[in-house]
Length: 272
Length: 356
Image (cartoon, rainbow over all chains, first blue to last red; front, top):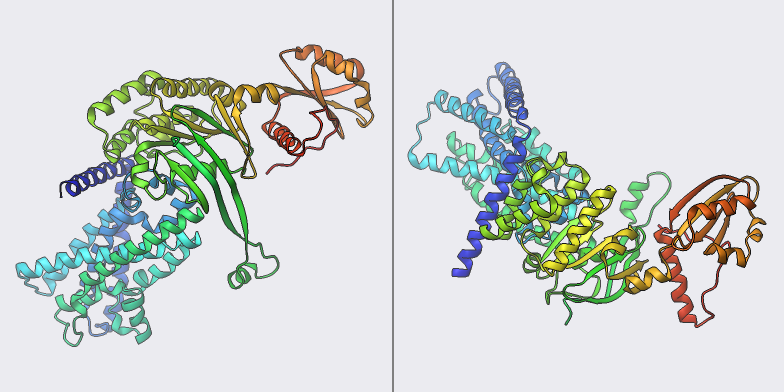
């Protein structure tokens, strides 16, 4: 027990120190902060603006009103934003390998995965979280929601899960670089299903194949669509799907652990 | 058992066979052929505690691959490595505590933050006690003049400063063994001298075992009591540096460019002439002659004057004997030993072996 707690305390101290180095690294480019946050407002404003125009014409999108979509979109954005703050770089594992930065993770007495995860932080996500919090508040108000403490707790669990689902998926796809040496095209293609499909549309407006893809193969729909069904009172007929986000996140993270371990073995034997 | 034991070490890489013609990337996908490239070929050696050993060899000889296996970054294809009784890749974390590593080509530090902040992060990563950390940082300020640039982000450091910062980072946790992969590459002469002095001090006073790779004969001469020469993944020479120098190194070359053919011109320099100017080999290339001589016995100026007497010199160039030549000399030498043929003779016009 003693040994375990000593190891845990050491890892915790190492993580804090690496995060500190990451934050200091980012602060070296302070001008980025304001430009980045302003950019996020413009970008998200434009996306929501398009949806608003769309809904002005049709009134409803698959039976969802404007503020339903606002909720859907911002639930995705808040999870995405949290992921971006801490883990924006995980999709770029390929570059770490090519540039040789990855080798240094292997000669230090801390898990290479932990070193990789705590290597960078990004301001951009802060803007996302700010925008999406406002968006959620707006939707909450306009939809006349009244959540209990329990619902709020579940909401936060869902937000964390959304971030974890995105992290898990991207890290899984990026880890193929251990085998192929190249994973960026795969990551970029797969995340199109998140940025272009799941982010702003209730997925039941799409055909079955696409729904299956974002539910099973690339389960980004658990970031916002399925959990939204519960918060928006549309969960009936969906079984347990609206409540599965934390479980999906957990499964993905376990998969990451397994794939990462194998990938590391391949990397140390090929050095590609 | 010695501190580092390497037995029959082999490392093979698979390389895709290049496919030519239209749609080559598509065809490669469906017909992925591989060739096996043996980067390290049956290497055996052992290193005792406190040694300062240099790995010498041309590019692509297998030096870095060997270092990567000793540091645990790469797993051997076959053979055994034990470092301090541990298997580097399998006992990764425990092994990481006993070694310090510097890659000349790539910093181990956080690029955008001051060196001192990197050293703070490494303190937590290695769990270095505060007192030890402070003592070591003081030492680095003393010997590496770390204080001159410790507040400057690494990306703004000169190459020499960056190497000093990286050395400090590699030694922060008091490792028993220090691996230096090309620690002086691209560094200017003065900075090189400073790095060498520091490495020597660490080795002598702290009894840190040092293994370094280099292209620079100077590193070997100034630092290493023992040298291992590797080419094509195999060991060509393992012995003390003095012997190596006497036998193969310590020579310069004088390249003389002449107009018109050189083919018949070597005849102008007979054995007596060679003896008088300590020239032990003359190579003829299409438009130049290359004299290899011992600078301790002949002043360069005398040799140039003597050559100019006999040849219409257009241009000339004085250089240290390139590492490739030393490797080749040893290569030829070892072949001769195996064949038990006659002792070394002076050779004219031997073609240069291409090394990659």
